[in-house]
Length: 411
Image (cartoon, rainbow, N blue to C red; front, side, top):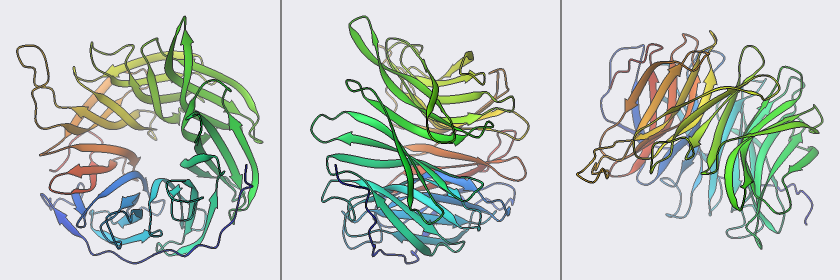
């Protein structure tokens, strides 16, 4: 195992030319934006700024590098009308992917993901964290990882003392087994501690970490569990104290398989997880699955949504008034005589709002030619929602849409 390493990094940080395609609504309260460059551009996360001055999305792009393999972190700020304020890339000559970001106490941003350019070698991804100022200019960057594994950061939070907690996954090269890593750093990115979660014989995947109301942390992810002689993935919830020591864990699901992609804490101290389920879905498909627990992880209720094809929740939040907003994608399902999907439209971005008991208040599909997916959702100061993901047309581009709190959207 190599030690956690700190590298001096050289990276690109230049504004991108950009374009916007599709309808351009004039109403100032909602927008629908598709934008990008000549190749691949996609968002993986979105935050609404505390200053109410717009949103920032994090993802990846190979539209502005030196070649088709030059995929970089791509961070974009948009104002409240959906216009691009700045659009910047960070990375080397191989592949960097940003999966998550948070706004920092100084008004800047922490972005986390993975890097080939600065990792252990080609196709040896390591955890990469990049600190930006409020204008998107790089302040510092750090790399963490091991020689015998592929390491990717998936989630980041900043604590009140300025330190950062980063959730990552480590997949062993020799065995293919994956484990969850939780890393705490100081405000400059220097390592404070690292914790690993997983069983020797099974794989586990982490999706998101949050700070709970008790001063510790909650990890949402997925874990291999055994049903008689069969292994299946289930939702996995882990509670930790402030030092990253496990207090309790719970799994949820059936023998067909589930995957958790996101978590939020409810106003009563409980949790809501979102992802997909095979076990409780319509036959032959996987459906969006939302599950609520109490503060100790005991299940209170669950809800599914979807068609007879593949549907998945990719992010979840609890609104300021206690409702539950879910974003992801839903497959456009047009059955033929054999109940097979004959649609050529692919996926639509999907948003739904539930009350605190799991009752659906509204659902919204956002689609067009090709695939659309929503990977992140945020609530703005007005209680409206911003989703971010990608739109697949002639090229794959960022998709950022503001949806009214009642589910309406200008498109």
